[in-house]
Length: 401
Image 1 (tube, rainbow, N blue to C red):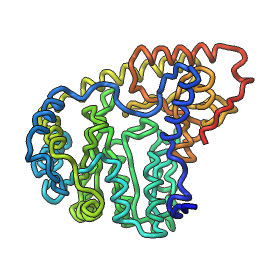
Image 2: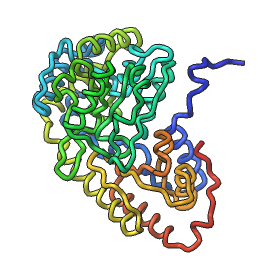
Image 3: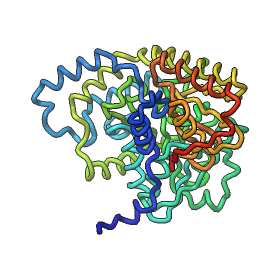
């Protein structure tokens, strides 16, 4: 019998893998499933980026191992983007590192910082990778509760001082997956003050910085004076330029922390295919206005979801960022049961909030990365279903556990 390592024995099943499995099972049963689950942009990558990839893929010079840190041209393009977008100065040689998407960077950064028993502060609800990466490093995740009464922002005074003194790292993520909440520069200043007081490294996940609504412009944590002393920011081209499958991102910020991350990465991966890096340079340098078109699409879809649920009497805090809507579940249901309920009864797949932490209970996450006609159909199914008299008496038979 093959025995698993203890570090993965205690991991929960990865939520999105289980959701994909349930989706496939439902399709096999003949159900027309509309997935409002995983946040994967449905719009194509811009054609100039695709064309640049094709051009560079034909160049034999790009067929060899890339540099571990990433092409200097790519790192310069990231630094130029930060100057243009956030007015933040970065040294491309010391303060920028290429990533195979921001997810791997977040995980590998934890490997470079966290020892057994170290506390890592994790937003709750939050991207599951924060807790999972901490557990893989044998650290101890501690939840930062994000509650609707605080507009899903941290209350630093609520973190016990003994926990804060033991904490080595904290994750922050705004615009927030899954809540869609945003934070302004003043809020980030408070986070930096708290982290400096307790000597905590901030890993700031800014993957959705370019998807914001109602006039809000997301800041970088590196805009805050002194943040570069203790912070690294992670992002990618996935959401900004519809490049999820390309797996290209970056870490920027404190040079010592970037060096730690680089040390881990040089031992576990061999960098990003250079042709992809050149395509990313094309996006960062020449398609800076592209995200504005995506925002128009996502804002329209967001408003469709908000209007539909408002018509059903469901009160939702309108998200000002990301392409998610964080929806309260009906009284008497857990988020898991309700998500299973929607899939089983009407073929609409959503993500249960409990998958994002204990404070995610009571919510489901809806992603708007879906064709508008299919979104309209999904919302129609939900509205018609809740117009029936018998739905509260039904119980789901599917399990998402």
